[in-house]
Length: 551
Image 1 (spheres, rainbow, N blue to C red):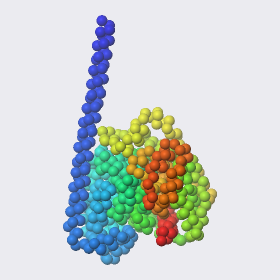
Image 2 (cartoon, rainbow, N blue to C red):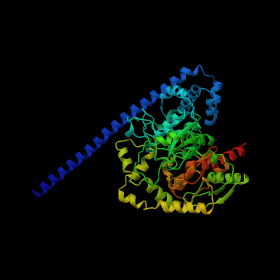
Image 3 (cartoon, one colour):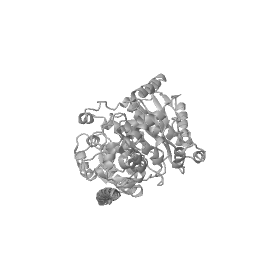
Image 4 (cartoon, rainbow, N blue to C red):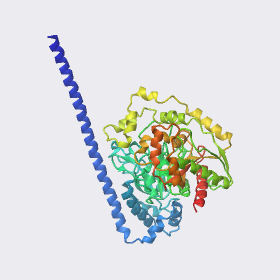
């Protein structure tokens, strides 16, 4: 009798358990089905937006001359701005030229996610302005997370689909005030916490220089579009290299300002409450002068009124235009991940050019990068155990390139605590600045993570981010300047690369960049907090010297 009762109880438990499992699976299936439906709707909306963009281009195409288009596309943002202001180019001709080119680039590399059809009407509003802003008539592309009224910033996640922005972000408002014409949004990786560029909604973006390579992330769509010639100026964000990595991978210039120099109000935030490692928003372009023009335009009274938390510090043109010799610290390797042959060569060649130009170069002892990356950066960004990010991902389809990271962050809290220690940002920052002051440095030169990685490899090479995350932890302005290209000699030397440990990560790092002959290699230019103008001035110096060498 007892045995029969036990059997009945066990059978009941089994039925209840099996029922619970079936229920959970059913709920998950329903969620996934709803997610897929939302994604299909979003894809259809994108298709309609791009068709609308193409129709607008076709309507004016007959009036344009091919020679005009080639000339417009050959100009920098600064050159465009001058010609638009003096009337030798019309805002309409410039906008439709870049719309057409953006469509062409998108067909090749899948980088545009939305078209701001309002840009056509905005041109007429801009032309009515009595005073022409610094960016009068200049088309600007925006990373997906930079909100534009009436359009959805997805962050590559179904959670945000259908939630159109109720107003423009502060940066978009200031851009419009300065006469710029935001015209497209660009692709990002799911959650934006990754340096490839793929999500379940819009798919994988490709590098326009080599379609087997990633454009980087998370501002990867921006990097791809600008490098492909479909935009002359873009806005990205950076919390671990998200501006700098796409610029390095795609061979363009970009600036990560000090957090708080420009306003992030109105941008999508998937991890609220980060108090230690703070995100930045900044410009991306083909040249340094265009970055400086953008910063000058954004650092205006309109910005300071719209966001009173931003210090009222207008752009200091005197610092940017200075020609005084600089005291430049440098390092070739951060001690955490062994720099690749092409990365080391890029720094060495730049050092030589700077010395020949009369600047003073001083070796800088960068230390404790293992601690900075593993403890300060990861702990600072993921301080809430990523609970807010996981909430946003509930019921979503996980992009294959993000699955490894999601698996890690779903570990129990006590396990995650064992992976990171309690840290002190203030102490490390003070020590770093003290060393900087000891050497009486103006700026710092160091490697940038490049060349571009093959698609899929960023998931397995996260420790290589130490080259960019250092300056997020320190909150120093840092910019990217391409200075050379991978040579056959670099590729041969890469075959012998073993890193510091010759472990799985080192091997994946080597494989990630194989086949990169001809791809751009950049350096990173750094200044102390709030010295964006000095950082840009240094970037300009590096850019000019590198260009002269190539000629």
